[in-house]
Image (cartoon, rainbow over all chains, first blue to last red; front, side):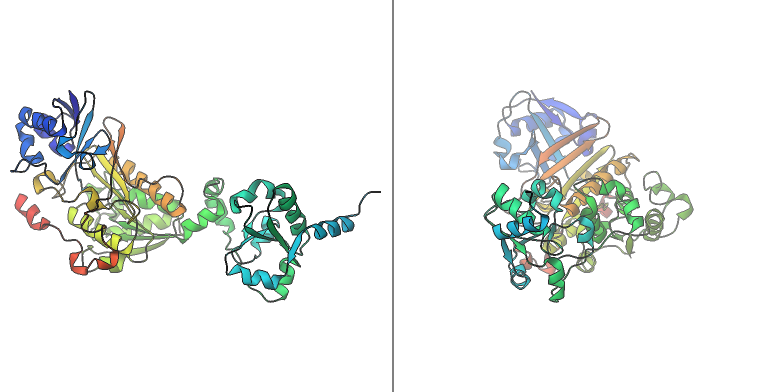
Length: 90
Length: 393
């Protein structure tokens, strides 16, 4: 099971947690597992066509999955996914 | 029988190469390395243009920092040509410099011939005292402090992030601080905006900030822009600044700033805060990714709580603002590893700092292109966010 770090704007959708566990062999599966456990996150993560929304950055450990294999990037036990939308507060 | 000083000098001069000031004057334009071996106080009274100061007593230890290549041409001088003759022999015989020469007649003959002398600017006695803790750090020293005093930094926003950043940059002696903010001080700001004060509620933030900055350090020139930055004024405002500090509270301005700063090649130290969380990165155009490489699109309004007031831990902008100030000082002094190509994520509750990599996007709509190709009407192109925020209520 991988650990997903939840950004502040999504915490209300996962019961206020900062980190949740989710299963899957790749980034797409792990995020789908998150969305099925916490349905409120689905529309925030995925577009109607099932693609990851462009305004959501996802990192496997410290690397942007866009420079890896995107949603097909393999995820191992003990890996951490960071979900990161932009913040504008100053 | 022991050798007299005059005899030793004759021997040394017979063993080294000398060069006439007229030839040095021609070589200066070609970028030859020139080292002044006099004492630092003599150097401070005036030196050859571009010369490096290495007092003879420090020559062996410091020469490699100035002249790493032993086969490159090197010219030494002193007041009259004697100390530099000894120094040249040391470099040639003991350290293996192959093309070292001593300038005949030293800077005295140089001046007699009417050639140009550069007089280094010196810190005043008060400045030496005020910045003494900087002067004690080798990475800063008098030269670095002068760079800070010469630097021009623009702060976008005199709010949560801008308050601590402005105060510490002022204290550090950054010579010019531009501040853009169209707001007035409100009671609800004072939980975190430490540059303002209870007595100054209702007055423009730029005026309040200026008052605090001058109380802390009268050396600082404050340039006030009591306006809201937009596509019509941004190029004019930011042009000429060395570094921009982004502490604005909304997405449209962050994208607009990105586009304009890429076009003018000005580095931006960017931070944002929400609740107990902060983000920070340095966007140095064409050396690293830009804001649009990191966040190609802004989130929709319901995921972007920049529309309207949001809660933030009062000390959090202090933490993030001072990380920004630190990055600004590093950029000005060209020291350390600025957070270019990295996004730092600070979680105040967990007391953790996480870092993720940020890459240049080869398809970035802005920084994948030459800055001259970016047209005025493309800057700050953004979904109609204000309408979106209004719709979100």
